[in-house]
Amino acid sequence: LLLNICQDEFDSLPTCMNEKEAALDPDQADKRKKMKERILANMKFIGHLFLRQMLSARVIGSVIKELTLCDDADQVPEEHVIECAVELIMSVGHTLEGMPAGKHSVGQVCGRLLDLKGRKTRNGKSVYCKRIQFAIQDLLDARKAGWARKVFRGVAKTKAEIKLEQADGGEVASGQVVISGQRPEYISARSGPL
Image (cartoon, rainbow, N blue to C red; front, top):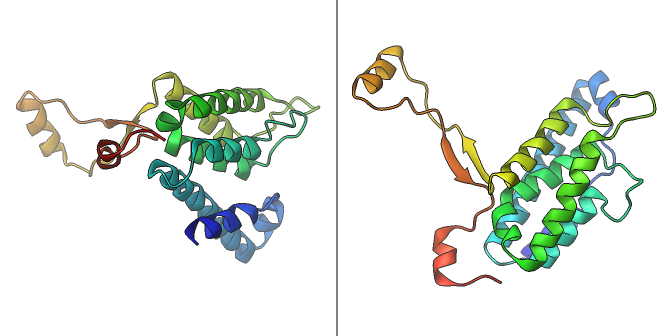
């Protein structure tokens, strides 16, 4: 049942999100924002299903290939679809690339994303906005670094607290390095790879 609902959500992924209409109408902009948040949350959820061994590497590989239109190099996916692909790969990258079927898919999709990032329109403008280009580059950088990336989860500190940390000989915490798409330890400990 759960997998069927995820499949339905994925199948209902809109091919086009009218950004120009949304810019004119505040209600449209709000609807579009909520739809985009829901789509990205669904991608993250699909990734978590994979990490909990409820979806196979083959399924995830076909999803990311479909999102990036790997089989049709002439087509250019919409920006929100690329965002979905990046979100999904970032949530499963380490684990997926550790599997033979997944390694091939990740390599193929990352090559496609690199091509799309540099693609230009006829008038010389980039096909994607800078935000999407940077998201693709962040993904490629994370992959190159073994899926390690820095996250910032700290709370705001006063100057006095920072000075106290420095006086104690400690470093001021600037972030935490995490592995993107790593299967949780409690799942890895009880069972092997798929």
